Image (cartoon, rainbow, N blue to C red; front, top):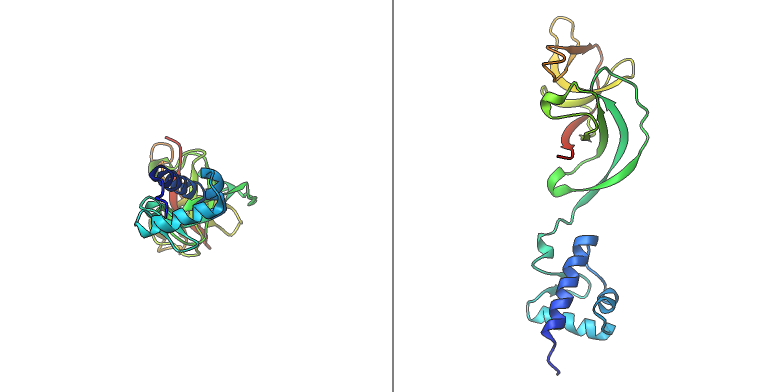
Length: 204
């Protein structure tokens, strides 16, 4: 059997790594063959030998290298559904602007959507105008959570859930801008939680 070219092995390995980073999956033999300018049979034989030598792992379908093992494989799509006020509550119609892919290794698992922040009432917790806030859909919240809340007037807002007022039984939503809104809160008789903020996506 003719010895295999190390240069071609390196080329194949490099292509597999770059393809995996871009597409989050292994390339097919046809794709590899075209990329490194060899026949499909030759590409297959190289993969088999590279597997035998431990250069990569090939089971007939999936190709893995030491580089691809470090790549995140789990992603989810989250819709950007428009804006939410961080000042006074304001009704917003949820229209999906686009879907974005986010890695589960960073953002976790669950059902998410993304809102664009409007206003300045949450700047003390790092949420500024036009920041994208990743919201996990859930109907419950703990004291201290930053929530997207819907009150009895069907108005939504992004605020910190500060607990329940003992006298009135109302839910308290707190502003987080001590300079502009010192001690300002919203009290609602019936609080409907639409989700809890988990991450902020912003440009530095």
